[in-house]
Length: 84
Image 1 (spheres, rainbow, N blue to C red):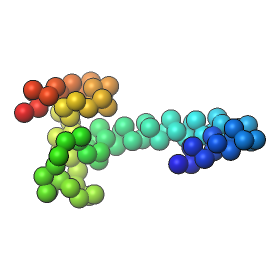
Image 2: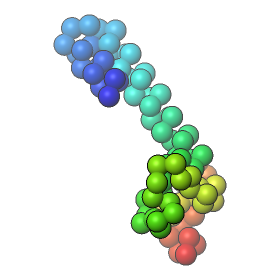
Image 3: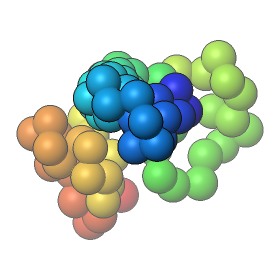
Image 4: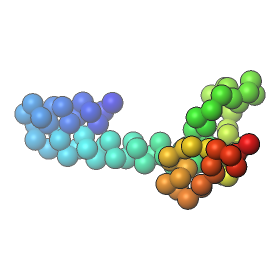
C-alpha cells in the first residue's frame, strides 16, 4: 500500500516518490514470495481445518504446490498429477 501511495504522490508532483514507490513494491513482492516459499503463504488449493489458521505453517511448501507460479519460479515444479 505504501508503495502505490508513494508512486501516486510521485506522479502528482513529488518526483522521487515514483522511484521510492516502485522500490517499495519490488521489496513487497520479494518478501511475499520468500514467505510463501518458507511455508507461511498458503497453497492455492482448499485446505483442511488444521491448515486454516493464521499461525499454521504449510509443511508441504518445500516440495512445491501444484499449479503455483511462485513455486515454479523457485524451481519447485510439482505438477497437478504429481501432487495427488
